[in-house]
Amino acid sequence: MKFEELQEKIFEVYYPGKHIIDSGYKYLYDAVSRTPMESVVEIGILMGFGSIILCAAAEERGLKYYGIDPWDLIDSGDHAPLKHFVGAHVNTEKIARRVMAELKFNNYELIKGFSYDAAKDFNEPIGMLFIDGCHCYECVKKDFLLWSPKIIKDGLIIFHDAGFDGVGKVIEGIAKRDPNFIEIRNVPIETYKKIS
Image (cartoon, rainbow, N blue to C red; front, side, top):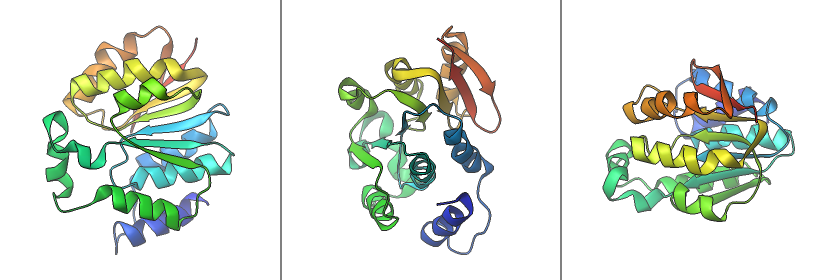
């Protein structure tokens, strides 16, 4: 499915009446085409907006997409503010699963749980990792430290919402200093390539 077709589906499901999509999502779609031939992993699905884009781009290349999200497990701790963002009554897991099923993708697996728990059992090599889960410093730091070793050489790690304090601090204090990665783009989404 081409990006333009995805836009129409996204507008239909998530944003009726709108006709413009964030350029960051087009960047994600294109980034999948530049990744090594390994799996695509997204941390933080919420309602599945980015998942549609990543999954479609991965399917075009014959890659597997994995999406990880705690969904209704976010009622406490650092994750509680997300319920206020989408509304306590919204079943984001149901929306994400329904949309993925409607699009009839054959290459995906949605994992319900916290990313730091999922990392323990995830043994697939990763060609692209998209970090868009909890934005607090400790969560983003865990995501980077637990998942970045699974990325293969020339693979990408992409941070969404780099302007958030927690995400920005991990980028500046950890990712940019990691000798295994080089920064290849910082607008609109921070992107690093694994070099060793």
